[in-house]
Length: 254
Length: 251
Image (cartoon, rainbow over all chains, first blue to last red; front, side, top):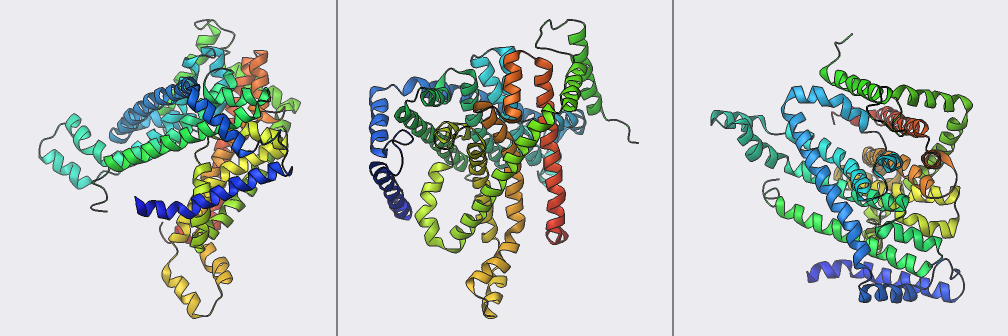
């Protein structure tokens, strides 16, 4: 821990210098206050949001979208990816459809989805789900196909059934791939959640940031942006930590 | 001619279901036009020139951002990898900026750069920067130590080593990062156009949504998908030409 701290200490010093430099540049009039308030003022606003608990409701609103979409999309991706990797018939059936839907930019689907599902949570969660599915699906497919043939033969020799083999051999073996796909999807999920909130014009952090800018509440805009950035940082950090725990066996025999 | 697989039949079946459900009123909604009408809208707007003009604008912004962000990613990546001090000093700032979801940086950038090209190109460049940076770092780590040692033995200076040994050796990694970035760049261009300003395909999509013109909207989504697919295919072809030696090594 102390060692890690020492490793990032120079970086933190640079960050502090950078903030101090910005503070000075704003005070000296090099950057206009209406564009960027001094970092200390943003800090005070941020502190007010945090201390008053005002940040909780929007944060939870965004988090709910991310988690719901991420969970649903991951399950669909893993199930479909496993089926396609395991049964050639399933691969032949779904592969053209997947290849057709994959290049569609999911963010462009938000406006059509708004027509069908309105601007509520259903639309937002569906948008997040759609973007989560594909990286998970493709990585699961790759992982399932990469399972050691010898292990599969051994499982058959021991008379393991399909369900048992999938659950106890194929999925654990594909787990590193699945988790790598899920890590990509988690970042995308946050992006789509924020975008859907912005386009819907209501809810969560994404809407607030856009709304504050349009109302010229610039300090608040930056404060909410910092909260969103921290959310991204924490989500990624937590996922990486969980991933490392789930894959602790992997490092022993690389 | 290969016999069409079950998957092709599934796609055709779904398209037929789409067409039938809209034509026969199973889904009674103005938001659900038949697929033939969507294709018709696509052809119509392409012929009038409205859509091609907007696509051209979006592509220009995308490539400008890709170029700026890609260059910055390679330069910073090489700097971080070859001068560890730089990575120690600025790594933290980069890692703090990385997890910010792209749409969220658009409002502040609007303040500084306005609603038009400079803002959008910057957003794209920011998105492109991170995957290229990560891959460049990875690429430099994969450069063979023997090649560097040989360069040193022959008395090649640090700058020339960076340009003539390190850069070509990590080109496959950089290109892989650019390929990821290319997909993101198109998406982000569209996102930026949807949120701010009145340019490009993204804006067209939102305008058609507000006008309630569903066929045009779906046509735009189809066009974007085709564009994304074509860009990726084009890039892969170029990649194979640029680093044929890499693939020839059986990787």
